[in-house]
Image (cartoon, rainbow, N blue to C red; front, side, top):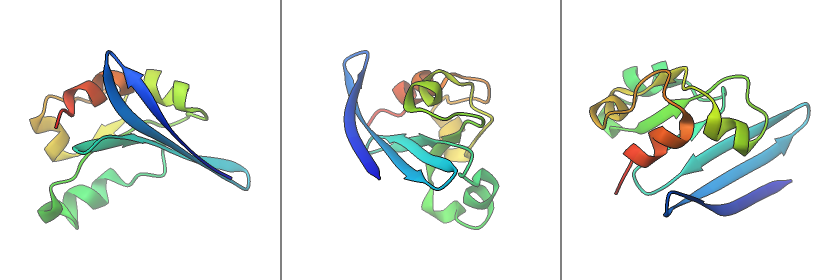
Length: 101
């Protein structure tokens, strides 16, 4: 099952996506600039192999819901996200607010 919903964080609109897969969920919250995602995101790949795309993203691990993703500290972030002030350890929702378009 796929769920996609707009969510508000301090007056900013983001799109939350949850894909329910067998034995796990795939989750992401995004805007036009970047996104945060569950542990399925390979930040090292984005930084190394896809560096020219300048992807703004962060990864949180051990989350099972969108609410948990928003509250969890980011375990890793892309180089492009760092340039916007997104840091490892920052809550997901705070990182999203740095991803202004």
